[in-house]
Length: 364
Image 1 (cartoon, helix red, strand yellow):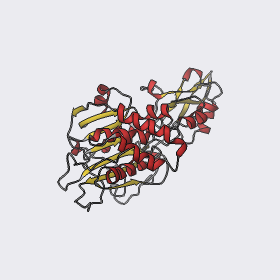
Image 2 (cartoon, helix red, strand yellow; image 1 turned 30 degrees about the horizontal axis):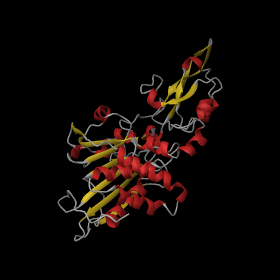
Image 3 (cartoon, helix red, strand yellow; image 1 turned 90 degrees about the vertical axis):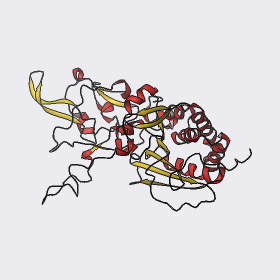
Image 4 (cartoon, rainbow, N blue to C red; image 1 turned 180 degrees about the vertical axis):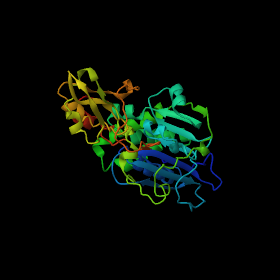
């Protein structure tokens, strides 16, 4: 394979940079994808490039951002701050669409690439921003090829950039993964190629709002917003976090008519999801299971395993968008007006062979 010749960037910002931002969560490989995109620019496209990532604790499920900059070879990259106005925005998990801050700084001509199996019409309904939106079923492809979501997204992003040949992308993937994971290289190459070829070739243009105005609201309580003379006893606590994006695939479904209110689900749940209240069961006064707080359920399914009467079953969450048994935690002293988004915890990943072993339910 011949090495790709130097390219001319089709568009740059006022400083002469072509910028990419990846929005993801720990466990989906956005950090490596950003590194491969950076290496792609310098090694294969004849450009100057830089890439780095931003994340909190090194733990699956925490928010991850990756930033990549390109510029022409004769120019130096002297900006090393996060990318605020990307030309390409890659969103690695569909649940992140519920967080408006993911789109902060996008421009009307930003190309937004989303890991999704939704149709273009459904994405229009889900996405409240302007820009050119593309979709690729990255998780589906990764499951089918036994590859990873990051290589599928790498191929899709390279395709939408419009000036990157597939052979150049393959060489970067082979260099990054071939020596360390030689046994997985064929599967990753297949996933990368399918991502390159199966991403939507036509964008869905959205013109609902101006993305530059999208910003995350300040929490009601915080170091700068706490009442004068008071303290915030829950600062940094997950009590204000919405961990629903942690679930991928299966979620516990509650069948109240089967429940005997034994409380085993509550005792095994690590996140105090189940909401019990005084009531009557079979003529006796006792604590009755009223429902689940899905804000704090991360989909571990321990409750499904322990329930003796199968009042909790594992179902595909996509089949239950409206959960009649969803009951926010009734014991909170204060219900947050805005739940901070946290991402998938990697419990189910695109490594389908591991998923099958962990879940014993096949592919999800």
